[in-house]
Length: 267
Image (cartoon, rainbow, N blue to C red; front, side, top):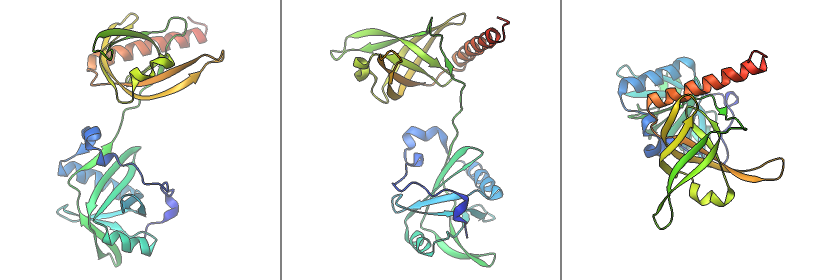
């Protein structure tokens, strides 16, 4: 049976499953059976510890995947260490599996399992999932922009009466994944979470004008040493084309190289 001490117990409140938000995470879903089997075999080979949730995320057990049937249609996984939870899992209509492999989050679901004997010991069996979420986001180096001459982002916006205006705000940082904006607290209503701005312009010195679309992912208040307050708006790029990502990476590489040269006394 799976050993509970290998992995920390999940949080006491019902967890959040990206798998069940397919509209937001559709690009991370695998549908091709060979791709799904490849991930499952990797989990089996590495002996990855897997948390299985049921009862709307209010109950769980820890397990590991043991084997796939020769035709790849069925998945065998270990019992948990708690007999009572094993009984409840057998009665559940849906099981959600979540784990990580090589720092990539994996999630998939199975219907009602059955109990079998596998290599002389009890185990669970279920149908191989038709879809599997493989959540791997690229991590980007985030460059803090120069304080003396900060980059500016011009955002095309609309007022409540639908009239257009342009808001220019300083950038606190920039990466290949997005930007951090600095705005006045009274402008908070303009940057509600998940708001999207499709006409944004950032002038990158020696690179040119970056045209992009941004989506608000997080906001929080910041107080400076002199007591001033502002909002940091974390935004991600929406469908940024490759050539524009290259512009950003060239800019970041050059600024970081110049900074290191100054620090070493060579600049």
